[in-house]
Length: 424
Image 1 (cartoon, rainbow, N blue to C red):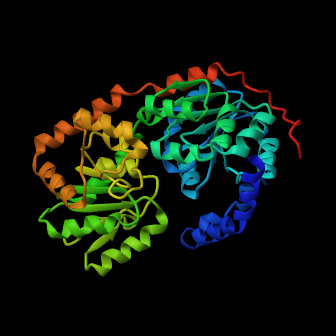
Image 2 (cartoon, rainbow, N blue to C red):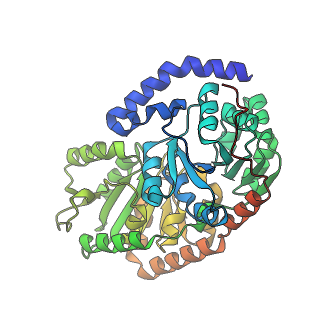
Image 3 (cartoon, helix red, strand yellow):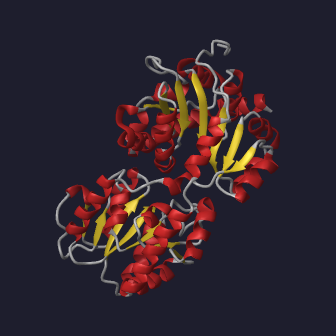
């Protein structure tokens, strides 16, 4: 099965390269560090490294508390963060500066992943959330590097997909030293797929604290917005903005609409959409007071989501109105702001259920209902304050995943730096 899988990857190579080129047309950063995606890196690290793989922005932000604890516990090691997307890499740079090493994770070709292990010689590998790469995990086992899957989530939809290639999945999960899942349901699905040494650690995203600098920036945003209430559409995905704008233009809500697309390559697309609708808008990048006639602020910046949440009166979490699985709602709750979500939240199913039960969030079925609920909450100050307090309590009551993660890491025998045994 591994041979068939790898042959399939080789057949996909032209499409992979074409996709990289296509993405670079909207986000030129995709053409930077291309060699790293095939295992070619600059000078090797001078110290042993503890390696964490965080695909994009959300996973990178979730590492903050764990990285801090790892630095304290293992001062003789450097932290290596690998990413898949330029936005994830940029988030890592913004969070950690030069205090950690950064690189792209190579594509899952045997030669590339072996080069990765030979170059960095990690003492430990931690894959965040749902990163199950068959050749990568096997190369880690060959190198004698303990590999952990942490903060792991496995939706029913993802489990069905991995189940279709059960032989590969079972082998890869069996080669991991330990798996720590976000919730009980995630753990049960991973066990069914073949994972061993599985425990429940909770969600690292609950342990994140709003950075003081972002709260200060949020206060500056709030001053720029003026006296109007602000309704934030956070991390929106393709097709969602049009649905919300249709509903918003039909209602009488007086709030300033703030749209922050999930992906920066869509900033110009949303600007064009606003112009075609005849809506007066202003970009965050203009960094000036929002004029009275402006109806929409386009959040064309990255790494400032906490500031947008802090400046808002109510937030809708994107990726949930259409079947994208939703985005992280915990950040909005952590700054004490009411949250609205659509029906598609399978990526954050447990967190959504718990937030709704706690009274911190309201789930809607469509864009019209979203505007109805948003209007009611914006008009009810007591409701907004109560939901905000319940959001803070909700986050506080589910913290502690970092400590559990450190306990698991502490029980793993960290491999020595040398991995010369890896085949060329």
